Image (cartoon, rainbow, N blue to C red; front, side, top):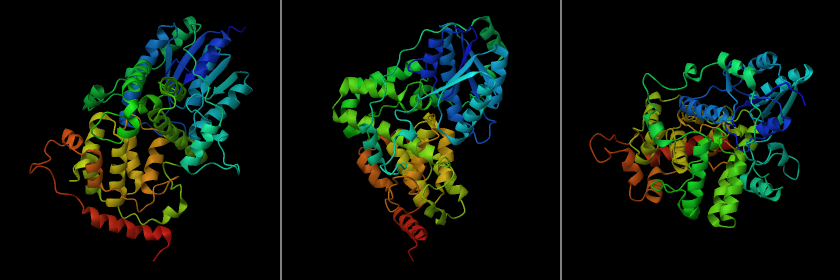
Length: 458
């Protein structure tokens, strides 16, 4: 057995349970040094938005506390990750660096180059699957190509080997004085400025969410015990608290999809609610499948014919009204105010708000995707652009472009008593509420006319 410490590099896996890299470190038996690097400098790495930074701060606090209970300090570094990790390896005399995989192109490039450099210098490197039920390269069509439609993709997943069972938090060997020195000389979380201060706009986030691994498991247990039975029928209702609210915990890896999968199957296998809930986990898998095979998902149309779509020059006043929830379309405004206040939004509301921006206001989906990236606590590098492209019609398995969500019909169907709308728009029936920004029928017709440029119709 070596006495050289093992570095575990945490990324989007801020948990101790079902963490394969951490399990591998424990099995080595050497002192463990836990590291997190805030990387905003490596080429192509997308900087986090404001709401995501808020969540990250608190999640790292919880992770540091949980690791500290096991005698392992969390070493923080900031900068281009490859340089930070190599410096820590040299300073600690580490014999191995372990991490769980990421799937964006820029992240994979960082990991590949770092693995080659460390291996060449005699440091063992291990990477593990932890964030997805099925690795993107393992689910292929009969022709050996990636899937572009969800239903056959998910059918192939269900026909594959069952996802592995999750592991328990391992017993770790403390990093010792060397790890303590690294942590003391490392960055301080408060100095990263991840929390808003002037102004502090995070009051609604604090009221709504509790980051961290333990909170994630409490939320999972509460959902499976209470809301799963009605999930299939009620999940689209805006006025009901019938969704899992697990998306930020999954995005930050405080909870693994394997834990969700097996706990759901254990409690409710064979029920309609469980099947529907796990299929929604499947949409997350599909989004990462698409991202892995189409790395420019956040910036380029997946369907190249949409490059011909004649987006007009951005109407900044209309975009601002959409962002602030003052379009005069109640369900859209309620959704956008919920987002700004809480950092979250019901999935049905996300589709309605995105459809209104891209089709009724004819605003390029990339502008909406960027706003959600900045304001969502669960801003996910795969699911966020995937969802926007799905609604816009330019993505994988996209809704047909002519399927324009009518906000008023959606309101009547999924908020029949206006409870959701009135919760966020108390001035709804007063003169203070604005007139509609656009005519829904006329703007839909304009969107369909613009779509003719994509189809080639004249």
